[in-house]
Image (tube, rainbow, N blue to C red; front, top):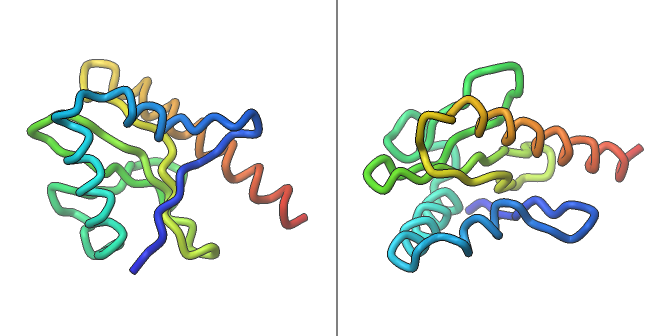
Amino acid sequence: MFRIVYYRRQDGSEPAREWIKSRDNSIRPNIYRKLADLADEGLNLLNTNILDVIEGPDKGLYELRNRGLGWRLAVYHDHAAGVFVVLHGWHKDKNFRLEIGKARSVLHEYLETEADKHG
């Protein structure tokens, strides 16, 4: 069993949680079900239609998704803390690279925050 946490900025905002709450009531339960699956299965879901690696320089960055409904969540597996951090959400469209860039930016905020806590 893995813990799922939402990244919280210093101003108290939680980008991914806020994005999820802004989704239609017909989509939100599916998102929460996939997050529960991630909590239960962790990286065993890798390379399935639910979880895949986001390619690039940031190790531990994954895309949790529902292809049929078109939503995506960027999650980071913080191995040291033993948690999955939900970073950013979007609906798949032509701006995929822009959304991945936003997810990476939020990941770097998280990593800086964690480094500040420990050092």
